[in-house]
Length: 351
Image (tube, rainbow, N blue to C red; front, side, top):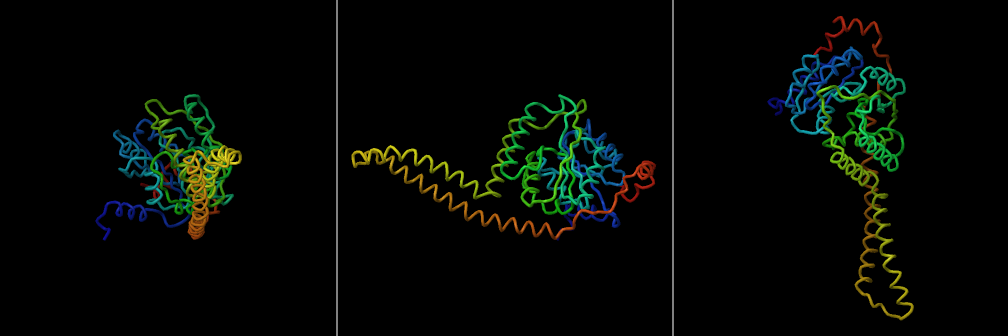
């Protein structure tokens, strides 16, 4: 039924071309109009991880991103549905590996740090290592972005738990069981928030390592809009709070409604005790309506909390069915790197 569908043919080709022995590492680079940087990014990761396979997912670019990535040695796949979240969802669906390295194609992240991140993940048996950004240039990390990152990191930490100092980093290393248990519902740059909350909700073993963050090369422009994408990230946090913490979410709404009702009711009670009358009937009706809404909000929170618990248990059981990160050492030694650079070890990982 699916043999004639290009997407399924592409997935089958990817699976067939992957080696069957030893742990495998995939570098995933989502890109949109990154011709100024993508070639260097692919070469840097090829040098840092000579035994890894590099995938560039071109998000309907209008420049030479795909051509330059292919020339640099990456496997290039097109995703027409715009948005980083859509690209990451496609990546996680298509690529089969033991370890996944996710980075941007804008040459702002330090590819040299990738072996350290992988080693940390395997040694500690983690499911995600987040590369927190250390700014190396004022032009690399705009003040508005820094403020938004601190705000959203604090908000997510307050709601879901404080385990990360940079929830919006696009540079991460994942285990297979993280990737294949991640639903990926986001469409755009809010995908990083969803990745973070997924790890926190399932209480996965995670870590954060500080890495360098540099400015884009000349000719490369950021696609991130501070206010528009900031609003989308905030909406995602609110949605995740409602879905994953419904009792707390609806309890806050119930508390606000109750406080409003009590504030309106106090003058009515004072007047009633003084005169025995309730002269402001519409206000009294409003108070009753607000208290009813508060009660309904609490009831919704209690019911949805049970539903959320069941969903979390199912996600956890699916997560436990997947293999843990490999513990065996990876061939990232200087000797292996040198032989790969000379073309001795690249055949079985060639694109």
